[in-house]
Length: 201
Image (cartoon, rainbow, N blue to C red; front, side):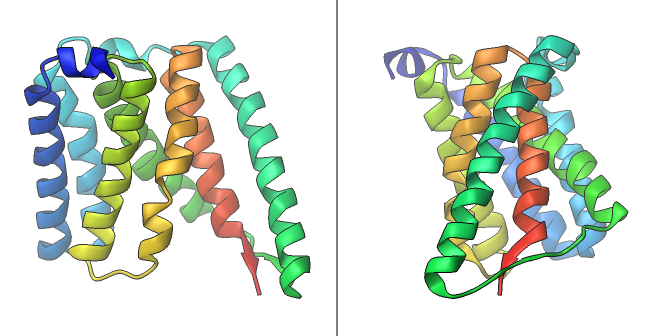
């Protein structure tokens, strides 16, 4: 935590507030589909305004991606096992809903990639990159979901949005461990698809 406190927090926090304000304004001013694309654009563009090293984050490393994919698959398999056990305990069943190609593409291009670039590739890295930075970036990640979806968009599922803090810790760890944004993008994307495709009924 000392590492974070010794850093200049003003610039990343200004970037964070700018992105969240832009997303909230776009969601109230235009339709959901366009607002989603505009939000992705803000998360991809703002780091380049505030950080000269932003482009380096996008370097592709196949080994980092493979390591991240292996960890992601193991964690998501564990999640599904727990979901099935929990469903049996509740007397419910787990229903698989096949995701559409548009949903898959949207979650990869407009959600997982820009969010990881901004929250891990920019915020976590500029906050110091250690465990303190992972926790801080995850708190900002969960706060963003609560503000954008629950407070200003009138959406439901506020408890689930608060719980985004925990998978965000995994994404932060993957980025720290592999030094590769694509490992956390893979987990973020796969976790979203698994979460949306397997439901308790």
